[in-house]
Amino acid sequence: MDKNEYPINTDIVEEMMTPKDEDVQFYLEEMQKMNNLMIDMQRELNRALMESRRMQEELKRNEQFKIALEASEKAAKEKMEFMSRMSHDMRTPMNVIMGLASATIDEADNPAAVRENMTNIRDASDFMLGLVNDILDMSKIEKGTVVLNQKPYSYQEFALEMKTMFSTQCDAKHITLYTKEAASNPTVMTDKIRIKQIFFNIISNAVKYTPPGGRIEVGAYQVSVNEAENKISVEYRVTDNGIGMSEEFQKHLFEPFSQEDNSVSPELKGSGLGLSITKRLVEQMGGTIQVKSQKGKGTTISVKLTFELAKGEVHEKKESFDILHGKNVLLVEDHPLNTRIAERLLEKQNMHVIHAENGKIGVDLFRASPEGSFDVVLMDIRMPEMSGIEAAKKIRALERKDAENIPIIAMSANAYPEDIQKSLKAGMNEHLAKPVDAVVLYKTLSKVLQCT
Image: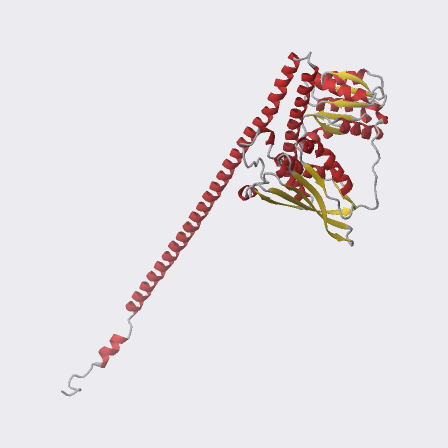
């Protein structure tokens, strides 16, 4: 068949291939619809993404809430365990004190029994005071309020004090206490009280957990000297051949209240705070502490510290409290036993004591006295009628010359930093924590009287 038999109508083809206005409009409308559809899809996608983010944030908040809740529950549990442990540890020596006090009254005609009872009461009291001090130290360290007082201190002095402190306990258990001679004996600048506290905790544990016939060695080893900075690094080691510790317990050794075996005899129990305090004190002093121990073999505790070398040898003078003799004290204290103890301590230094039973009486006595009658005021804080804080403010507000300058010293069982600040804000010069140590009291009195 001839290809030209069916001719193509070019006009029709051209008409088909030439877009009409209505077709163009149709295509435009369809494209607009598709564009709108894509916009809607993009909006939906954005909404989905936003919802996904919201859900992720919600999950994150829920996870944070869960973590916070778990932390809160853990803190509450730890607080309950702390209160339970403290209640037990406080009640144990308190029961001893109350029981022996009652027995002493019944055995008043037996001097030997009375002496033994009083010795045991003193030991139980020392334990309670140590426990309270540990709790206060933990609080101070956590709040960052521990202040290090730098004073000259030599290893020779340190070794002698440790030997004096523990020789009686070691002799009683037939334990050999060996203090290794230092290769050099430089005098360094450090906080003597905190250093002694660190090694008291370490060595007392060594004595406690070393059986009769054992051996404890205390030594200091010079690590390095930095002459440019005038500093020396020292490693102290306390080694014993006692009962040792398991590897598992060593991971928790420095946690508060950690004790490996609660079934140990009562005389081996302590507060469980000592080594936790020790570690934090060492770290605050810029040092490190490490433990190597083996169950049934013994323990070595190493403490590395860096000190500033003291300039020349410094010898501290023996304390003299002559300045206290003949001074007049206004003692404001509501508790009869505390009053009697304070009066004895003060009278031992030939001080004259006038007693007021509460803050109101104290203010009235001071107001009624001739100007300059009293040299110093010792003020309890918690008292009926008027607190020590209010009494101190009223004394300071009196319109007389000595009211402005007389030293006022707080003596209170409230010993937290905020309590001390309240006392100072009320116009008091110093704040002593009860039970008051005699030497600390005398030093504080001497200090404030020298400033007047």
